[in-house]
Image: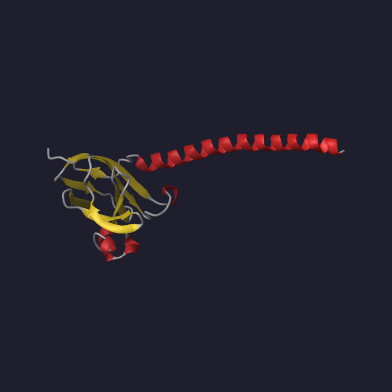
Amino acid sequence: MNNIRHIMLPLIIMMFLTACDSGKDAATVVSVNNASNKLDKVLHDDGILKFNSKKIYKGDKLLISLPVPHPKELAIKAPDGNWFYLHVENEGASEMLMPKEQFAVLTKLDFDTSKLEARFWDDGKAKRGKVFTKTGKYLIYMANNLETEVDNTLFFSSVIQYTDTNK
């Protein structure tokens, strides 16, 4: 009986580990694909927000036409991955472009790309800085809750190209 245990136990362990490994690989692939799909979902251009131009240069005005109703919060993601929070209702007056009642019925936003500043996070610390500083694609993102998964909130997203030189 001891001989059978010595032979069977390693076989059972090997079978178990092999089964776990194959399941682990499949889960990893699914997990990676799901993360990628969520990222693509956020970074797509849904065409709902309208712009004076999708290609802007240093010092240009960025005009955004908004449908009403629209999501109640606004952020811009820079090419380096920093999120700039322009209008977040539960963060206090310093993180709001205007009172929430006024923002809710707003049909146009007008930003000067050379002056626009907003809060961003750097190494766990809140800071303020200029939004448009680097050439690249910027994600304009509106959501009813900026701090939740995109599947759990109403959101609009558009991508614009910014060039950090004058025309």
